[in-house]
Amino acid sequence: TVTESSHGLVFTPKLSGLASGLHGFHVHQNPACGPAEKDGATVPAGAAGGHYDPATTGHHGAPWGDGHLGDLPPLFVAADGTATQPVLAPRLTRLADIQGRALVLHAGGDNHADLPAPLGGGGARLACGVVGAAN
Image 1: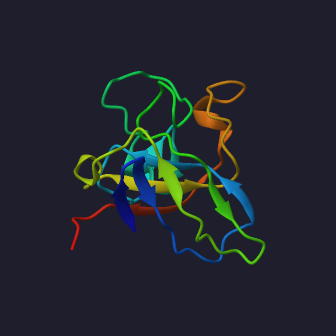
Image 2: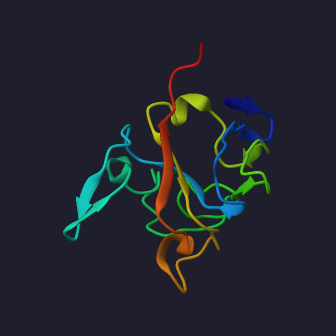
């Protein structure tokens, strides 16, 4: 679930079957999670597009910094493969701003920089979902 708080949006996952550790976690531009072709290869959840970046900063950064607005703190997965720890996105304040956008979970961590690897060095896209309207 995603909820608004006085400190930003709070993402509260209920995921299982994942590798333990920290995983890159981002709001992506498009409302789709299907595969897409990139450089002749199929990319899972590639239809989600790039990180949500309405200010067109063009760079990956810390969730509290000046990079993509969709750059979130990493998602923690416990030793039993579950992710239930809430994630606070301090620069995202309105649920309406991310409705109809994809949330993507990546394999591996995220250094919140474009060096030494672009987009935080996170791995493949493991999971994807589109943020819907509040009930």
